[in-house]
Length: 539
Image (cartoon, rainbow, N blue to C red; front, side):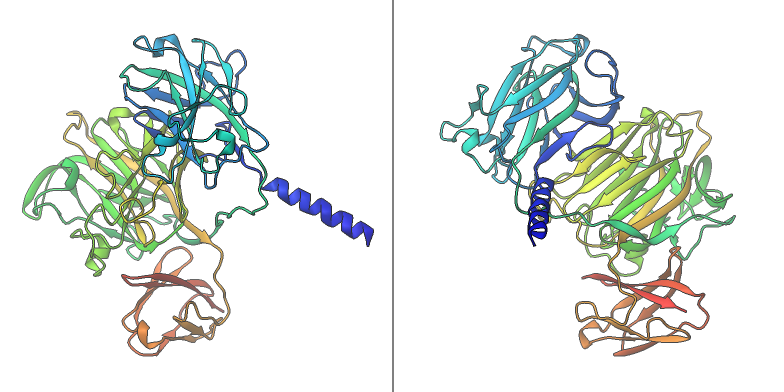
């Protein structure tokens, strides 16, 4: 009995240690931080340009203030930061003298704020430390022993506060337009342990849809829709794009296990309009809410080319999209939400970007980040989006470069709790190089993963649909309550091929499975209000 008690005590102590507030980032892949920026450019996992002194690690964070009055890098924390047992934040910093303009003091400040109030800066507490140019140094900020500055005289001492949940780094002061280029590494803070278990992220480990692009010739029309209709006044595309998108195999085709989307310099007339360039724009016929998207691709080249791997809400009102054609279009852009997993401009050959467009910021959105990929157009890279209920995480080859996690969640900042679909395209900008002939985006695969939470037994989800028998041999039935009348079902195999579509107009719908190959099938309930996915096994 004594040994059991001792074991239980040790287990409890071990579990408590798991929930400490560890805020760290070495920019080599070990991170608990989602960096964002105000009025400057921040690039995570940037190649260390100064491998010397106390820092010879390969990757750092690049901080480039190009003249923003209040430029800073920051992150939000999901709980209040506890300063009860540890009060020191630290990181390494390098500021090259060639990256500084003006005559601001060479310094770095760390600020703690409350992101739950309309003006988080108004009650901030701050520590400022001097720095030396042209060398790596470690700076620390001790809120128990260093001189701190409370912006508001009414704010209590930092150790007496429980409302601090935002951390900012600012270099060479604020309220000036001087420039600063700096590099940061090994951010670290470990706060007081909490006896509350943190909320865990879902694990997206079940492949629910994919296209491996096997075969040759035309694309798989059970998975993809060619969007070709000119949506702007019947004669052009948005964003000043100057190409026609076509459904020809000249512009999109399968070959040797790859999808090729080809932009061409050629005169082409469609819908009564003649243009000098052609390309392809594909819409997925599969849509989902939350999960991980992986696209392995090699990008085109050429000034004026603009390839993208991106997503839109199925509710977008845009003529010619697959989902608008299917009757889902109820909401204009950007209220439908746009997720840019990968964008690349030929004018900036080795830089790829990710961005978010919402009613709160769109077009020239402030919500973006990216990284340099020297072989973006010569090698394949895996572009990934992890879509969680509270944030979006973008990476290339598992190196994260941007996280979108707004301070406030509402329809203006987070229209991302409904289904979105995937788009693949190469746009042509008016700045296209006059010598451009053609270039392609080559895609090895598109894969979508979601959390493993679907039962293969007879079941009911939220009092909606019941499927039985399951597993099925020659047939199964869908039993639906009265409120589900009019629901549309799409049935996919695990490779993402659309097998069948079913409309529910009675409380019992029979599905013939006799011709199906044995395996797992996903029944996607698609309507404008909600979405559920059910698993059906064919024996």
